[in-house]
Amino acid sequence: MLRLIRPFFLTLAMTAGQASANATPNHVFQVTEKSVALLESLNAANFSTPTYGKTKVDPALPRHVLQLARDVWRKTQLLRFMNGLPTQALPPVPAREIVPADVKETVDQIYAQLEGLRPSYAITVAPEDPALPSGKSPTDVFANLLKVSAALDSLGVPTTVPNDVHQVAASVLQDALRLAEVANVTDAATAAENVPIAIGQTPVDAYFAAVAFIEDLNALATSPKGIAVTGDINIPASKDKISPSDVMIVLLRARAELNAMRFAAKDTDVSQNAGYEGGKTPSDVVTTI
Image 1 (cartoon, helix red, strand yellow):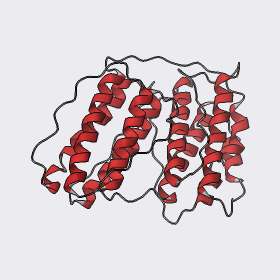
Image 2 (image 1 turned 120 degrees about the horizontal axis):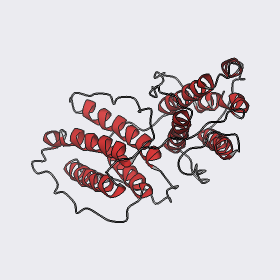
Image 3 (image 1 turned 180 degrees about the vertical axis):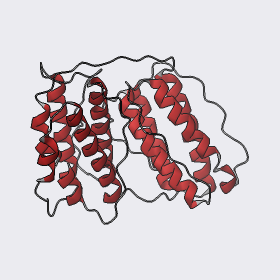
Image 4 (image 1 turned 90 degrees about the horizontal axis):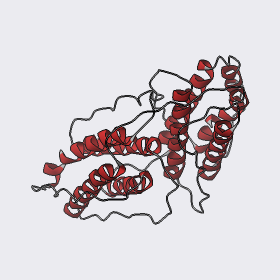
């Protein structure tokens, strides 16, 4: 669907906004380090060992980190549910430029939710606060959040499946249509409704469809009459082995870019998640993208 509404964006011309905050990536990284330490204690008590990937992380900005943090939150809530603890949802993504303070607020909440799991694993002592690092970037925080995510996986959090990925793809489509609405592009929704259904697709197809969408967003952002956003839109690198989790991460990045464009277009609405649907396949994800 998304590929059919892309041409309508090319007529837009808007400007980006600015925001500021005191927190830095160093502060956010420090919290993720503490989360990793706590999760490794939980894994030790669970007789499980996290497997951390060695894949190079694509460059990230706070808006990308926030989207990944929200997926880590999702996994944290699944683990709490598995252990009979209450769960809760995060508020929608705010309609403003995302800064490290926004990310820190979310990772602080993630750590607090993980703290509540200690009694379930008979962990009586919380990890000490790590020293505040220096020279950390949003990309470093992104990489550390991937470690948090992997440590949650090793505790038995259900593997990311096409249903999960489809929800993010549907949210991206929702945001794209909202951007078209703000810009008065009335034909976009009709184009999206008439997309042909994809058949026999794989996570690899979904991954590269998502990358192609980000490439289109980059072309729009850098066009003389495009929607300029703060910071670069980086195109995710190719991968040899692609799982639904890899597709999820690229779509989260796409959502971050779209939300930045919506802010630049002076859209004041928060970004809502699409509803969760079962029975989805990679073909459904490709159809939506």
